[in-house]
Image (cartoon, rainbow, N blue to C red; front, side, top):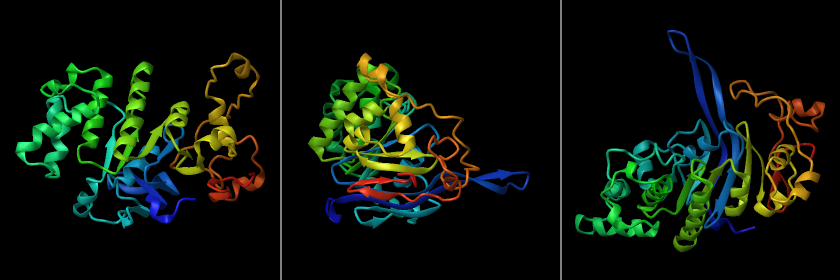
Length: 326
């Protein structure tokens, strides 16, 4: 294990509940438990992949860590400083050290702004450069993401999807952050462009010493880019370990089911391997099942699974699983 001072982000018992309001008086009748008591760490310079089905709480987790949402409960330590309960005005100094690459390169760029002003906006907000250095810094950011600085005057609709995502990456890097949350940054791009963006991100990570939280659906992409992987299901982390171990020896039944759905480019291996089909649908986060959230769909569940909430526990060095059957 790396020493404690190598940890950049430490999340402890994080919860994010959204109220369900009803009636004219808008009474709170329930909570959507989007993130329900999760803990993890991210070490300096590494990429932690966060995977799971739609609606499991991946994006909400990222937004809580950035403090775009104020968590319902729990602790978020960034560079040793507590962020969870800070008022908004005191979060701003930390925002320069953290950044976000959005999922949608079409919706995340203001169509009325030029590409140069979009990339340069963080420079103005955080007062990073003076007016004489501003344009040089914007041009440098364009070159960093392999775009021609002559395109700074163009507006977003004049760029392709891959070029727009490069603009989004340049904007995320403008304030020279230490930590970047990548919220499914390639899911809306063509497959041929996805590889280019992933390779660019890996080059920038090595060049600038960045730390990534990489949120994704595509498990093959996560395997390629991540050092460690955390698997989420209905607001809980069910397994977390290094990338190789997770793909070679998954222990949680949900992780095994997810990996069984990833196609293997070998027809002989693909024909022989077992495909795990989960019964039913993901339960509602408003009314999750008792005990282990996964037990109604789990192929190895026993009676105790519906009564006990399994803690995330270490099975071996750097491999944690939340399952009483493991």
